[in-house]
Image (tube, rainbow, N blue to C red; front, top):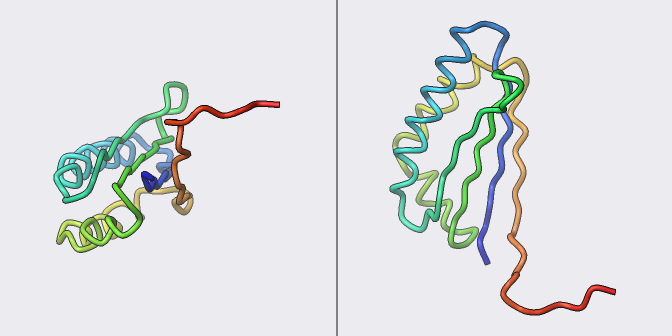
Length: 106
């Protein structure tokens, strides 16, 4: 099954932090999307609150994130992003449900 990480980030309340965070997330997506066993690495910005961002990382399996964490770019990410945030990142680790088979809903 696909291993997924969802990260919510909330930028500081100034246009420069929002712009820098947006640009860093775009850059990160372009870099991490090339990692081995990465299915997708999406970045999104909330439509109503420009300070709210979400990352959705999808990997072939949980062990696939070793390639992500081994990417030299990883060492640049947190030191750049964390000072731009108002609060700590909210990170969730998930296993996608298998939707390929029929189920009975009672």
